[in-house]
Length: 111
Picture 1: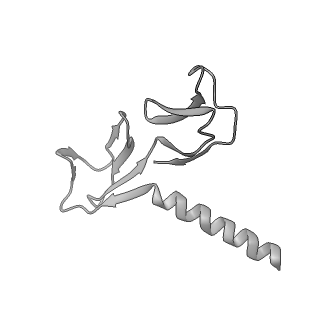
Picture 2 (picture 1 turned 120 degrees about the horizontal axis):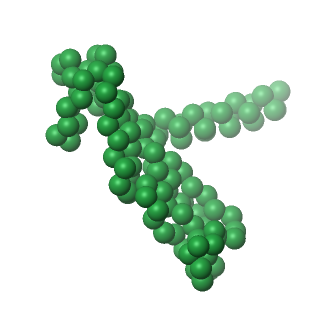
Picture 3 (picture 1 turned 60 degrees about the vertical axis):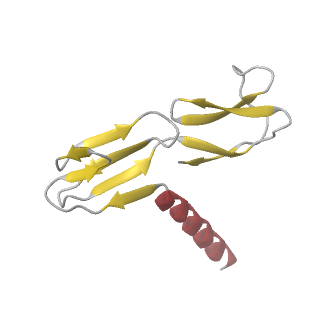
């Protein structure tokens, strides 16, 4: 029973974080409008420059469904690593050589 409760809690946390990386924009007609862009149902738009990269799709009801596509570093060993942006993603790298990945525990989230 304890295992069921534990795993149910873990699944709930994962679902909350998964849902937090997506959002919707209610429509007012047959097409979707967002930040000056108009999309027809089935069309997609992708913001590919960071920070905050995302992909949106216009659904049949004229609502826009969007999700973040980049990663944000939340925790890393600051004494030996630093965070750099590469496209839509933040990456933890060695302070002495940005070509080397961070050699330590790194936590990242979608966003």
